[in-house]
Image (cartoon, rainbow, N blue to C red; front, side, top):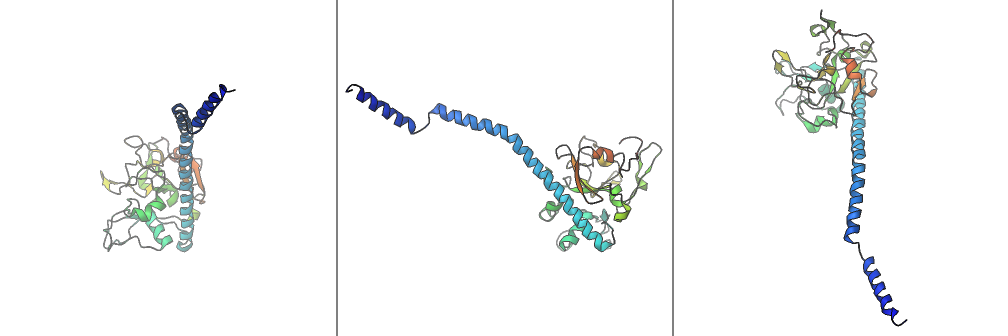
Length: 282
């Protein structure tokens, strides 16, 4: 008993020392486990974040639809034109779009303010005052915020309620199509028609300038352009598929929907009536 007493004291002292902290091996093991858990969770967190952006985008489109319905109540069922001139006498070359009209109507704020800013075409589309407009007309998932950013753009055939004739080779005769300066009544548009969609943030078109005599439209997507890839793949003026491989749309009956194949259908059947509008895919 006498000989074992010191051994018991030494064992108790060692246990007390060990209870006071971790060994280096134990600490590294805990760090490795935490790192493994983070690596497993990060993809899920990224998907959840992307999904949240997609849901916000769809909600924004529905909000725009509500604004359109309110605008129609005071305009005799007409939607805003895709292009318009706010002051043709003093600034004949300055073109605005449907975003400016809708913003001014809903928020009762003037968007044409030559006394404050030098007027340019499509101030919303160009994020002239990003703090005012970007939160309403730019998708949160769009990586850029410049002229070629992820704004919502109207699909002109549905928006204007017009239809295009075909050339002999089956391509669109764009000279016969809907006039972006004209607006359509809701009753003139098929409920299945797409009004607005998530636009390509890499679009090479959209600055409103004239290139080789043809004006780059900035406020709308024209017939056949829904699925055009552009000179450099991915840079065409088409709808974007950045939300899980799909695009968010607002339809003429003012419901929002996410779809992965619709932009391909629109490039062939722009009013979704089941009849091909072009003989050769763009």
